[in-house]
Image (cartoon, rainbow, N blue to C red; front, side, top):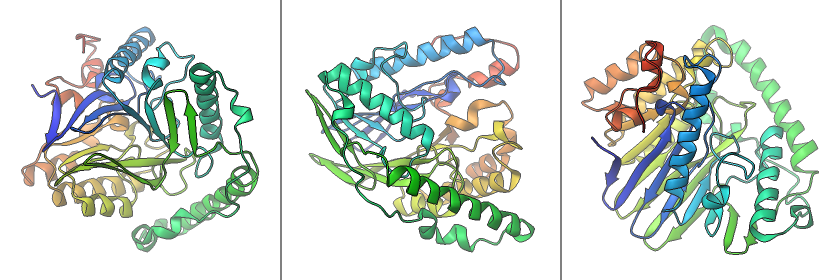
Length: 373
């Protein structure tokens, strides 16, 4: 039973993912130079998940305990965005000091390319962090907005813009126009007007840096923070995320964060161009099909995942997170698993890598909670 992924001197432990029964995509990356905990957060599964509420809460607490244990081994923490399955607050039922204290924290910029919800969540997190770790008041550290004009990230998505959507084209153009208007409102009313957090915070032995589009080197290890990328489709109202690339020597890990497939063709081409040895993707949220995801965008995600499987050297490919929130995920992505078999590659959930069956499959059969991760 595998407990981690390896490529050269890069080792990756999958700390907790949705296939283990709570929302999360937390991993511990180790090289000879640095140990990095990525996205230390967890949340209980949605109401439609086939387990009683008290069991969902127990699984969330198990995820927290696993994340706390992994944090003790980490030098640095990465937060790709400010959803609660990707970071913890100090008032959560977890020792947040053990996650953050004394570490370098590389985080998504909370000042721009962020929606209103995550804007507020980020400020709450860093306000708590300032108070708990350094006895400081975040309000006293705020600065004037760092810029007034913001590029439309859709401008860089050539493949998505040129795709032929057939009869869906008119509706898509309507949605894109609404998305551009939403982006302008965010930029004009929030990002360009409201006070910003400084890009670097010293909180005693804890350091916080906002790293969108940056690259850092620790010894012979390079970590690249790609993005901000849309969280799913173009102008997704849930905001933007960073994707992570870790390189050492000739070997490379790529962690997509919440690209939801990826849905967007240009992000798939970026993954193919990176050609990682180790690849961790979040699948499309099929449990939201007909609500926040339509069949056209699901087909886009499936096609992009198939393109990636055929093109990159990674084997196995971890496909988890949003995808593992409903039991029909493998049926809905049957083409992905067929392409993987034809390519002689394995597409696995985190649970399967660990030799376990995903919780959603057991729960859908009424078997309940039958193991202790």
